[in-house]
Amino acid sequence: MNSIDLIGGSATQHRVEDSLLVSDLSVAYGRRIVLRNVAAEISRGQAVGVVGPNGGGKSTLLKAIAGIIPSLGGDVTLFGKPIAGQRSRVAFMPQREIVDWEFPVTAADVVMMGRYPRMSWPHRAGRRDREVVEEMLDRVGMLEYRDRQIGALSGGQQQRVFVARALAQEADVLLLDEPMTGIDASTQEVVMGIIEEQRQQGKIVLLATHDLYSASCACDCLCCVGERAVSFGPTEQMYTEETLTEVFGGPVIILGQQSESFEEGRHGYMPGRAAHHEHDHTHEVHG
Amino acid sequence: MDAVSDWVTEPLRYQFMQRALIEVVLMGAVTGAVGCYVVLRGLSFIGDALSHAIFPGIVIAYLLGHSVFIGAMVFGIMTSAAITVVATNRRLKEDSAIGVLFAGTFALGIVLISSTNNFTRDLASFLFGNVLGATTNDIWVSAGAGLVVVLFLLLFHRELLIVSFDRVAGESMGIKVFWIDLLLLLMISLTIVISLRAVGNILVVAMLVTPAATARLLTDRLPVMLVLSSAIGVFSGIAGLFVSYHADVAAGGTIVLVATGVFGAVWLFAPETGLITGRLIRRRIGDELGEESSVLFESPQILPPSP
Image (cartoon, rainbow over all chains, first blue to last red):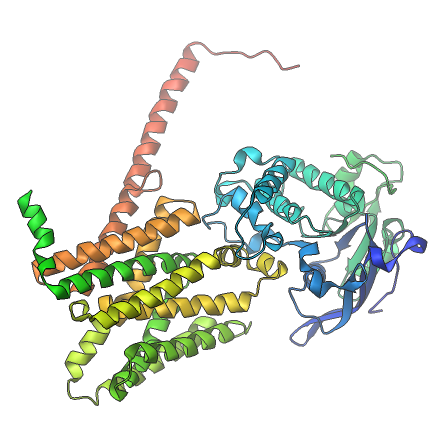
């Protein structure tokens, strides 16, 4: 089973003009095919957790949608038009490891980079740009660190700055690559809160993570990207033993019952396993 | 006081010294600014490679009686393009490819120049610079090329910043990373051409790296670093030129030595990050902590539990 065609969320009300539509997307590195005929339809206000094992292609899917790596074939359209001409509507947050932390920029400089697609040539920062930078730094609780060199911040603080940069792009689609990796609980809470907030504002959020539990809490759809299969659907349908076993290629045990609280769920979570949490579309995210 | 002003004004009675002074100021300012990106992107090796790869272009133009500048530019463009394209291949080890390329082209330059009658003198002036021989024409070429480089740095400041810091994010924002890389290498080539008169082929890389590395030790802001680095480049150029005149030694080498000396001083004494200043700060903080803890020991404060 190499491709599954599933429509996420409340399937009936989808309209192409309101959706990010991925069809038959295939990506290869050299001869190795990483993604094969992936299809997904995500509407405004939906958050999708892209989950799967390491090397399965989570990052690849996000990068292909962001247009950073070329695809072998397939279409990605946003609101009915090809995404290639609408880069400023898409904000991509790369994994933390690829950034040069010794670079002489401050937290505020990094967030200002997010304003680049909104600036016209020769890209001088205006008053509105500075206002947005302040607002987003404040939103992630980093305003007081605005003049710190980026490498002098803790891992969680750096992650917040990068989330603020993605927000500063004021995009319609947020692609977050591993925002939950190696960060403290309070930063995780900030990120979860922002995902929820963005959904309520009608944005589309894609969140690549190997943390199944936080994905199932923050997202109403899951896209499971595994070596053998890519499947996409509402969290309630996807978050089952059979689907996850298929994706991860090994036994997956879902811990706990529907009535379990968030805290118990978190304690029950083990690497390589999944904890279950009752999910509905309106629930509040809490730490 | 008179001695000091004489030290400065006496050499400037000569026109060749006036021209040399303008030449080293232009060189110092431009190498300092471009050098920031060389240092931040880890391009020292590529800068060195470019300066060597340009060498046969200079020799060919010289032998054919054309402008040395044009020869250097043609080879600079070809090498920049070759390096940028090679760098896009994921599997090839970039540095070995570049190593092969620049050693080969440099050898070509040496073989070509060995065919001239004034082999030794010509080679020496290309390799080590001859700033005292700068002509008015050289100055105009340097000023023009320098203006192009500075304009590029100003107009593409934001693209350069984003691509240098976080390439992937830059790509996702629609920045044409390949073209920015290529343009940056071309600007480095231009800068090398400007520096040939002053410090020569071999020492160019020092002017690209040393002032920028010094500036990096002094600041955490890129705009400040660009200005500081240019200032250090200009200072090294002027100071090196005057010292070399009075000591009757090679100007190019002296300029690079001054830059190296400034780097050494900053490395030792930079506020907070310097080797010696850092140690002093740690000792002082240690002393203060020692005093505080003794006070606490005498009258320990017990805070009520917060509600």
